[in-house]
Structures are given as structure tokens and as C-alpha cells.
Image (cartoon, rainbow over all chains, first blue to last red; front, top):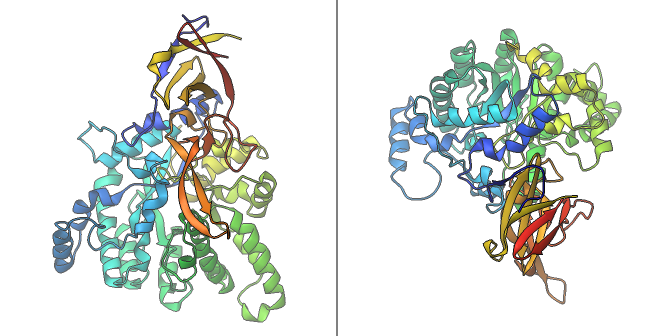
Length: 402
Length: 121
């Protein structure tokens, strides 16, 4: 018996790791169409794939024959992270004990054998969220900056970069990347920039922020100089660690993640600003990825206050730290909106209309679909369009066909 | 106001559910401890498909009389529905988040007539 005017339909009772990405994100697809922004340009500046699922392929791209041998032999071992990587067990908590299936695993059926499985999964998220472009990053390899063997970090970075540029990116024009730079070995970084700097799918380069070497050190200056001369952006991609002495006191994932993902970029940003890197490389676009936004207002206030009292310690600066910070770019995810007034003030502080870049972080547990930006109550339509796509189009010189 | 037929009463096991759509409206109907509860399938956080998430008991922390922590365990009473998008949790019987009372799901009345389960929209 149905006394309503429309026939009811039964939906999937439960979303699991086997559910199709398009079904998981169906609400976003529907929202975008209902609200009429399905024809907007949307660029997702931070999404991920699970390179560890393809680890056997990645290690085949290692140059070093001995490391390749170890990597191949490690795969015969039971349990643990794939050999040569330094993935930490803490990452396993991200799916909140299986509560967030898409973080746990994307185990859905993929019939198309003409492209790598990751390409199909990315296409599904691109279509479901209405994205024109997606900037792809690895997952566990973002931990590589703390690898105890700098040479292994560099060799794995090179192998991953070659693999992703050869096997993944060419399959779909909408998928781009900011390639991993293993700055523990600056010479390898320069080699990577030269090898991939003109690849049409490489929009720039990325340093993983979980690392314990000051980013202003003189040994890294040639890297920044090379990028600036080529007009290629540099990104700092935040990450987590349970390994440093501060994080060891935070015995729950929620605590460690809340602090760790921000602290790394606070440290690097402070060095970047105070050591005058924006004065030294004024034409180098710098992007800060995945630390959310709430930290920015704090750091602007803090650094401005201290700089006013101690200008002699930062003699390269010609304006306030907050002014340099407002010249750089930020991805929005994971956006903090529990106090919308604070969110609005943060947007003003960082000049979000021109400097903020939409990022989904899909398929991670704290992802933000484009509707997150569309729904912000204090933005006008042009600001939303800028943040969702047009700022990124300008920054990366993307070719928008529509 | 309209009645929407969801299914037969016997189709629902304890802690079972059905998620239905009528037009643009999606509703999850849950059967917990002998009662039916219905909510819009839309999380108050970012619009995720809340009713299609996992059903898990609430996690509680045990404190000794001296206020020391005695560890975590499952609640015997409170059953939660967890949003599969980001993990927001709501009590299935009240539709309210355990720590933020203003976060509550849109609730619908359920009636059972001659073994047929209906939601009132």
C-alpha cells in the first residue's frame, strides 16, 4: 500500500568497502545538480590514491638493482607494510575502526582492464563530484620524509614518480600531480625537476611536510631557484606522525591527527617566512596543503606580534609575516566550520577569494566535497567560483574546455 | 502529510533497517529494541548518507570511583548510526549526536498497521 504520489525505491541499506564510489558520493552528485553548479569549473588540488596497492609495480621502477632486489624479496614476507616503505601503523586508525569504509579500502568492482584500476577509481570520483581536474598524490609515501634511509627515500620517490607519470597520469587528461621531491637528497630533486618539469601532467612539485630538516637550509636553495626559474609551484603537503616526542604524548588518533597535521606546516611556514624565502623567491608560488585553515589566523597573529618586537632576527623581511602569508596559496581541506565566524575571519585574513584552492582529499576520512565550499554562508558566487576552480586554473594555467 | 509504505514488519530483524527514496527524499527506517525509528538519509554535517552507515553501540569510557580511567567499552544501551562519509555518530533512538545536542537528524514518525510499516512524511 502506498498512499504517496510517487513510487518508493529501495536504496542500498549499508555502504561498505565494496560500494561503488559513485554510490558513496551520490548525495554530492545530486546536490550539485539540484543547486545548479554542475557546470562550474571545479579543480580538486588534493586527492589520493593507494600506491601501496600497486607496490609490486612501483618497485619495478627502482634504478638501484640491490634496492629493487630487497623490495621484491620483501614481498614474500607475511604481514607488515610493503618492504622499503616506512608506513606507520598509526595510519590504520584513519577509518575510525571501520566506521568510514572509503578510507578503509575501495574494493569495488572494476571491469575496465584497459587502464590501471586507480584510473577508473579516480574517474568515478571525478564524475561523482563534477571535477574538471584532480591533483593526485600518493598515500603512505607521504611518510617518506622520515625514512631512516635518505637514499631509500630518494630512490623510492624517483621510482614512484616514474611509475605514476608512466602508468597513471597519461590515461586521463583530468588527472594531474605535484610530484614528490625527496629533499634529503637535493641532487636527486634537481634530477627529478629536470626529468619531469616539462611533463604536461606535472603542475609543479611537492615536499612532504613530515620531516625534521629546516626547509630554509642553504642546501635546498638550488631546488627553489630551479622551480622559480621554471615557473613551477612548490607545495608543502602536511601529514601525520606519531613518532616525535610531542606526538608520543597524544595517545589517541584524534589528538595526534588534530595537532600533527598542522604542527608540521606551522614549523615549515615559520622558517619559510622568518628566513625571508618569499623575498628570495618572490615569483615562486607556494601552496600549503591539508592542514585545514584554522592555523593560519593564529600563526599570522603570532608571527606579526613577535616580528614587530624582534625585527633584527628577520632582517630579510620588508613587510609583516601575515602579508607574506597572504601572498601564498592554501588548500581548504579539512575545513573547520564549527565556528563559522572564525572561519569567515580566516577567509578574510588569507585573502581566500584569490588564494584559496578547493581540495577534496578524497578518498580520505575527512574529505570535503565541493558542496562544502558552495554551502559557506558568507561567500558570494564569484568567491565560490574562484575557490572551487578559477584560482587553480590561473595558478596552474589549466586548459578549461567548457 | 502522506504515508509511505516501507515494508512488512517481519522484514526487520533486530537492529535491521531499510533505506528508501520517494522522489528526492531519502529515509532510513531502523528497528531497534522492538521499536521503529526513521530519519532523513542526510547527515547534518555535510549531507552524507547517514542512514547507510554502520550501526554500532556507543563507546563509553569507564571511570573508577577515584576518577581513574578503566578503559573503553561498548555501551549496553545506546545504539548509534555512523555516517559513512566522515564518522558523525547519532543515537538511533533520539537522532542526536552524543556530544553536540544541536546536531540532530531530521526525524519522521513511523506507524505500523496490520504488520505494514509506514513513515509519515
